[in-house]
Image (cartoon, rainbow, N blue to C red; front, side, top):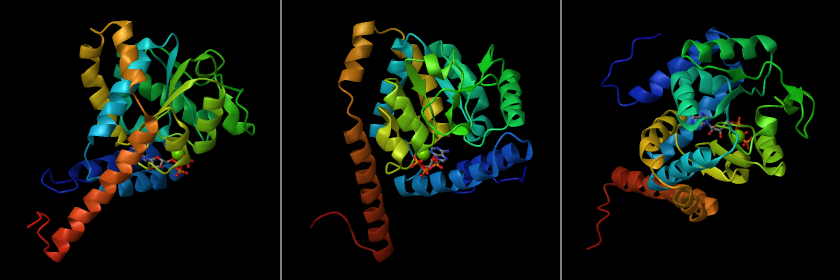
Length: 259
Ligand code: ATP
Ligand code: MG
């Protein structure tokens, strides 16, 4: 890895970039994953590289859904495996979720490498190697495991492709995603769209769970009933607008406080 000084203003983002490059070099992440990360970074810049309040609300709703689910599955793609492998294993453990390797650019070698990577962090069981074409999509993109994503009632699919996210919602599953682009088809079709960097989102969810497990099932459902995904997406766009206005004012030396 390239040495990155801790005081660099974009330290976190540069570390993430190094992790994705290492993921590509180790055969976990596809080359297309590099550009996906770049698109995410651009939206992170617009949102101020922080977890906004509505994203934290979405993270809480997502954690509640995973805790309430009968059969939750966390999907892991090449970018997620490069960025947060340890945290994904921990989240699965804390919520009783299965892990399934689920790739857009699928090759058996890459699936195996990601399974092995998650096992390095003590994942007990990782699905994905026996995926069959079970989604209503063309053959390669349709593949999921019969006892994994296909059977799940709640699926957490961070950084998912729009078509596959839609196919999952059409199967009457509750779908959670993480996507920094509130305009992507994935963000707009999932039931819970976390507009936050995957690295922040997963650690926030892990931190919330010890408190959430103390709630009753009814209390967890209340959080979900109050949740409105359209408002969450609209709020993310508003935050981006406000952040841009603030930056524009700074650039022009305009004092934002009204006289
Ligand atoms: P869609 O198919 O949903 O319309 P898309 O074609 O714009 O989306 P994809 O290539 O499917 O994008 O997926 C990449 C998405 O993941 C992008 O929207 C990008 O903003 C987001 N993304 C990439 N890296 C991260 C990250 N680290 N954290 C959060 N979101 C990310
Ligand atoms: Mg997408």
